[in-house]
Image 1 (cartoon, rainbow, N blue to C red):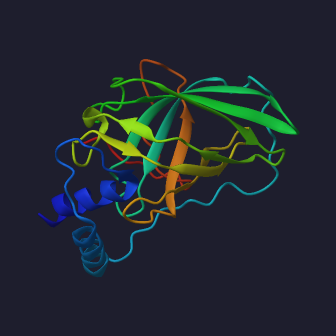
Image 2 (cartoon, rainbow, N blue to C red):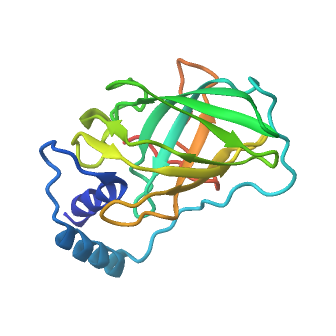
Amino acid sequence: MVFRRSALLLLSGLIVCGAAAGCADPEGEFDAFGQRYVEIHGSSTTTTTTPTGACTLPEAGEIDGDHLLTLAVKLNPQKPVMFLAGVTTTAMGDGLGLSFKLQALDKADRKTPVGDATDVGPYEVNADGSFVADFPPLPVPAEANAITGSAITADVTLTGSLCVGELVCGALDGTAVLNIDGSAFTLQKIEDPSSYPDAVINCAGDVAPLE
């Protein structure tokens, strides 16, 4: 029962609840339960540090194509929200412009598209590979919500690094009822459309198995 209740807390920290049924945690109860969760389980953190060393920025168009975008909340990264991210890169300033076509994926298989796609960007990637992508509110259909099963809207910012030969990853930040700064994201290239990669949830390469 503690696990089921904690799962509700985790996604509530990621989203601003809409009018959909099933999202009824009042703010006071949410904050109190968040404190109880930490007291019982300790503070669970994710590895968000971006790769270190010299960064070789991809050429415009070099990494274009479909990627798996994983958003993992710090209290329980094993319950990520998954998107198919169609990536497009163009020349911008001293670096690149990074754009996404985001499509939520069904939590049951992390592969089947659900809901409508959302186009975001371009976001500037600096010459050293660093970038900040402040997404507009993202709709997450009920089928893509692995925790509460309710349709919600997510407000997130990705701060990461884009370098040739390295995992694209970094910090997932946002503020809703609870501040979720210090969570993590990854972006993995889909080399074979018939076989998506496992959901890597942080820069350390940890994986969230599909249950």
